[in-house]
Image (cartoon, rainbow over the protein chains, first blue to last red):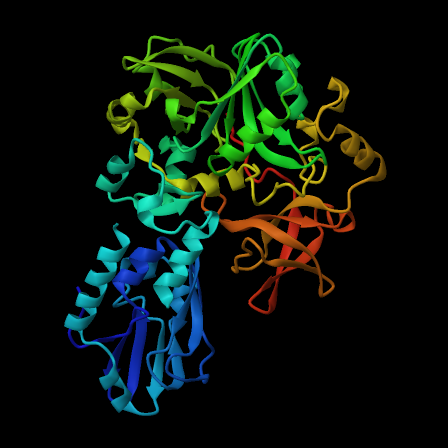
Length: 132
Length: 383
């Protein structure tokens, strides 16, 4: 479910590194919490973003959720297919529904993020809290 | 935090309560959790917001049927020789027009002519009226009625005596008919009857909050699981699915129906909210009728309108309405419309901006998104 080569944030974003370029999306846990996704707002190509900074929103029927960048860098590409098919985020959050690609300022920043096992443990704890 | 942002939005509808363990639960709580429903704190109740997804549930109600647990709603019963007089005093619609077995949408009024709540008034007999009120307001409504009871009548908070299910959609009647000998066809819209449904004594009302045909049934909570299961089974081949509060909200918004705390509250009058059709000044004086007569003469300073967004952005509850860059009003409810496939909402604007076709802006995170005033309701059922 959670690819071992990805890294994960507490805010439920994932990033996959390919050399200096990272592909970023939100996790399956996040899309399940959101429900039906109806609209996505992404930054323009060329935007400079700091790690932890909000760079867009994913909207479900009921809620608006900010997306936070896992890393510092520059947006090189955004997933245009989400404009007409935002529901892809519910169907394939780790693959076809990636949100943005970024050129990282410092690839070593990745080491501060959770690996798949840590992330799964993290969301298991969250699920326990929520199902009181 | 991505997810807690979501959760805080999902809980936006609710009164904040300290801990999950202190939430009130309907008799069907374990059924919802067993079905894997996403639960939310709604006005202090632990309620299902969605089961299979808001869009799927909304679509089911518009094309087949959906089943809602609405047991959190309150029931207040007024009895006595002067039961009608008490009901007439505290509400704005004319309950004297009701025949036995008929219901009407109405407002519970403050002395200022504003809303304590909106509700359905059912005439059970000349001496007995059953009021169905909002979950979050039931205690305040009860206190309000008691405080204004100068009549030979009693008021009782009978919420704990009832569970309530709403089955809504074009196939709802046929599904329910399988479970009752009471002929459902003759029960016209906004009328009700008493009878057995699957062995449980019920008040069967042809009412609803979705804009579709359907029924709301009230019964002793001990029958809750049995009735839920029988209805789900009877409706399986017709495509009946369980539906939560998320779809309940998108459905009522499409149908142009008000939600207390959004379109109406204790600062709004029926004239402002487009509810003049339930406000019968000619029935005689009632709480707030003086103020309402005055406002009818002088005119309102704001009016509730419907709007549609003109690009893909979504204007949501609480966002500002802009005309020529100036903030002139607020969105009361706004969201994507699953059936109409556009983004809609209701908002208060000055009368001068209320005409159909008026172009406005909705302020979304610092930007003005184009929208247009359009007639209410957004959706009217074809049959």
